Image (cartoon, rainbow, N blue to C red; front, side):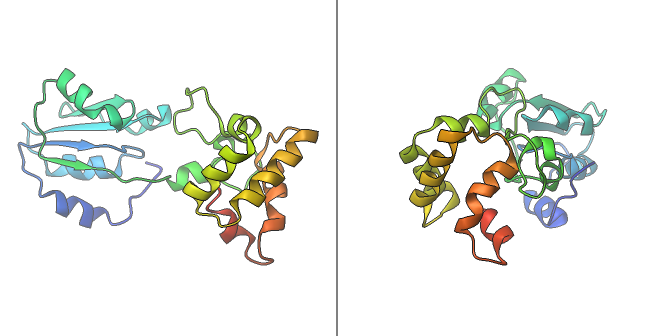
Length: 197
């Protein structure tokens, strides 16, 4: 298990698990929440664990009460219908990126390590952060940085990215952080880079 969930007991307690209930872990990841749910389920209970990251499958458990669904939980109703479930007793979603993703340079989620600009939760998805950074126009980049990174200087950052890629494509994490550093307060670079990544 690569991710120990924060507030595990509190999360599980809020589900008020019934021994024969049907539950969904929308973000299976390292399997920590799922194992805790299974520990409280009886023989007739069911648990469905969703994750679009192929690596998450390695953390599954061999338990007949558990079904791993390799896919995005946005399709939860389709998958549950396929498995014959018309209602569930609880759904858990631990949204965000796990420390596991930040610790693997090749995933491209962390500015601490150099690696390809990837940032895909589903490694089989075709669209990478490199394609976004090098392919989106300045306005689209500014909108993304403002809406999702909540950066007040999003337009200036987008302009710097576009200017840089006119001479050379931005392909790695460190190449991107090199463009971003001038917009960071000295001594606070890591804190200020975090919303972008």
